[in-house]
Amino acid sequence: MWDDVNSRSISYGVNRKSERDPRLMDDSERMKHDQTYITNYNKALDQLDAAISKSDSNVIAKLHTALIFNVGGHINHSIFWRNLSPIQEGGGEPPKGEVLLTLNLVR
Image (cartoon, rainbow, N blue to C red):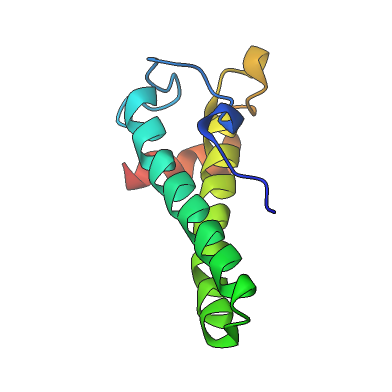
C-alpha cells in the first residue's frame, strides 16, 4: 500500500570524510545511521497496514509518531549531508564571514 523508503534515496558519496569537517562521520557510518531510520519507518508502515486491515484506530494513532520521527530523520539527514557535499556534487557553499567566525569559536 505504501512506498518503502530505501538507502538508494541517500545521495551522498561513499567512503569519503566530509571535506568541510573531518570530525564528521564517514559515509559508511552515515549509511548505518540513516539505515536505522529507514528500517524503523518501513517497519512502522508494515504495522500500519496491519492496523488498518484490523481497523485498529488506537494502533494507527500510536504509529503516527514513529512514522513522522523516522521519515523525518531520514529526510533531515539526507538534506544535511547533501549540503556538506562538495559544491560540484550539489553541496552548499562553505560558511563565510560572521557565520564562519562563530563556527570557529565553538570548535
